[in-house]
Each structure stands twice: as C-alpha cells, then as structure tokens.
Image (cartoon, rainbow, N blue to C red; front, side, top):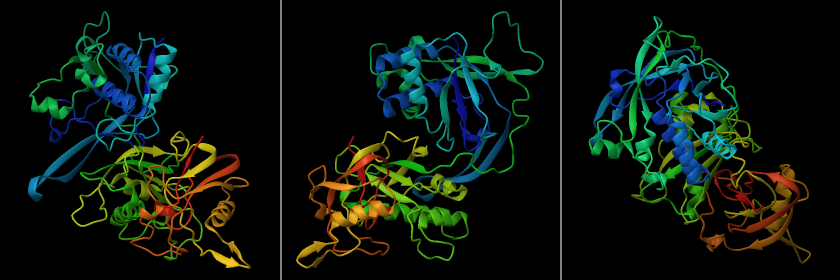
Length: 478
C-alpha cells in the first residue's frame, strides 16, 4: 500500500533555497527536497513527540526511497528587503518563493513503501507537529494520508523511461542515501542526516553527507499559474499561538506578569506598524473608542516555565475570539522583546505552534480535567473584609465567584490552599503588580489553590488581577 504525505501552506507561500544555491539567485526549491522533508520529520519526532528511536530509524529508512510528488498549480513571487549584518550594516536580499493556493495540498508519495500500524501512527503524530517547512515564514500543516488523491506530476526516472516528454523538464533534487544518512544503532542526533547546516558549511562540505542528487522530471508549466492572487481571509480560525523563548539569560518565573506585559507591548507595536499606529482590539482589550472591555474576549499572554528550572521558556498567546489577519501578521513579525532589568538581554520568541485549542489539547494549560492547580499566584481583585466577626470576600470566595461569572465549569470549590508554587518558591517572591498599566486589585498578596469541578473543564484558566498577563494561571492535574 503506498504511503503519502500531504503538505498545506496556510500563508500561500513556500520559501526555501536549494542546497548550493544563493538566496539572491531567485531560484525556488520546487519540489521540496526529500532531504529537507525527512530532516523536518526527524526534528518534529524528537522534539515534540515521544516516539521511539527504533521506529524512527525504520521509518526514515523506508522513506529514503526517492518519492514522487503532486505539485499543485503555483506561480513565482519575490520580496526585496534589507537584512541586518555586523555592526549595523545591511545587505539587500532578493527573496524568491513559490505562491500557491493556501487551501490546496502538495502530496509526497512513496508508491512502494508500506508502513506498519505503529510506524504510521508515529509518523502522523510527528507530521502534525510540523509548523513550517523551509524557512520559518513557510507555515506548514502536514498529515499522513490514507491514500494519494491526485496523480503525481513530478517524479524520478521510471523503468523504461527513455527521456523527458515534450511537456517536462529536468530538475536536480536532493534526496537521502539510506546507506550513509543513518548511523544505525546510534541516536538520531548522531546521524549524518541530522548534521546542522552551519556545521556542514564550516566543514566545507560540497554536499551534505548521506545525501544523493537525483534528476526528477517536472512539468514545464509548474509555475504557469493557478494560485489565487486575491488576498483571502484565513479559512481556519486561529486562537492559539505558542512561542519558545530564547535568550542568553532567560527571565525568572517570578517575572511572569512583566514578561506577559512586555510581549503584549511588542505585539501591539508590530500591529501598529502594519496599521498606521492603530491598536489591535484583540491584543489591547479595548474597543474602537479606546475604552477597556468589560469581558475577557481578548488575548491572554501566558508565560510558562515548562522544564521547571525556575525560568520562563515558553509564551502562549490565546484569544477565544480568534486572531484576525492583522493579528496573524503581527504574530509573524514578533521577533524580540525586552525583559525586566537594566542590561538584561532581549528575549527572542520562536513560533512553534499556531492553531486552535484542539491542536494543543494535550498541553497542561488546555487539556480537560476536573482538578486544576495554581502555577502562578492568584491575586484577588477585591479586599477581604471582616463582617460580624466573619471574614468575607476571601481570595477563595472571589476565585469561585469569578469562575461562576465567567461560566467556567460547574460547582467549583477550593479543596486546597498553599503558599508556595510547585518549585517551593513562595508566592510573595513573585512580582504581583503591573509595570505598564493599571487594573483593580485588593491586597497585593499571592494565593495558590487546587480547584475541583463536578465535570471536566477545558483550559486555559487564568483568573484574578493580571490574569491577561500571566498571573492566576492554573494547570490540569489529571
């Protein structure tokens, strides 16, 4: 049974420069090289799934066979821009890319490859974790197909094929040599297939080790058109953007609210540059007249420490109403933002996921559970009072009341309260007040709770003062 992969490019662009070519040559890698596809699969498999190395090795050996392609109608586009160099210098880059309909799929087909059920399930899981193919602006959605749905129109020489047809042309494609690309019995990190491009160039390799050039035949009119030039609205409602954060010194988890605010500020700036200085209603939480919204149907900026080393390493931007075209373009331009403290290095966000709550449903912020635990301090918005010798409006009372008001779960109740986070750090050590804005709050002290619901509740759950910037976050416990 043939094996086939479907690739969709939601932005309608495919950016990739072929090995051995310079970006300013104006040459587009088309079809996407199998060498590039397999490297992307290995990276997604190792970083974002828990698949075994033995299954991965078997899959890569099978997919090392040169595949055939169905290339959808496309055209050539380009952009010219200046890239920063050393000490403020810049260089002009001529960026050429393939333009195709964002709703069509490019298919990669191995006619004679048959995967086991375990291999197919693991491969599909890895493919669904791909966020881009080629350069980072080539947003990508990938999946394993049950069967190919289109006739291939780009393929290596077939048995009995004497030469090119009158309507085809030859193109060199970088494929995988399975005998040399995988060091059997070793971890994938040691495979020649997984050597970084920087290392290969520093060692002056003319071709990557473990690769092989194969002549493919593709249609002469592969860039003749057919892709819509009309700017369309995204066909999918995107509500979640996940970023990995990199810096020479990553911020402490105690600076959660400041990092959330600075990320929001930078995204607002990216949006404003694209829209003549106007503010995004999704990012800002303000209506068209500039008044603060009274609901929570705008973006949450949720910094998290996911390796539990005490430093923030991820940022999740969530908006239930969805990101519009302007917000998506701003997210694409989100390259760096500052952190608290003089002479602290900037933070560089890297987009690792863009989708819906369902797409990231296994993450602890989004999965369903009846029991949720604080991961950042909950700060009440009202002061606790003593009436008739009884404390009222306590933090626990306000927490349950806010859950009911926002329609989160049924019959919430606090079953535990504690003064430290999961790392043993006291809530009082956290920054508990905004740096860039106001907001109403009661006593500035943090609280940690475990909340129980009668029915499973899906996240994210972020409550109290500063909840749109990372305070009051909860994670699913079951």
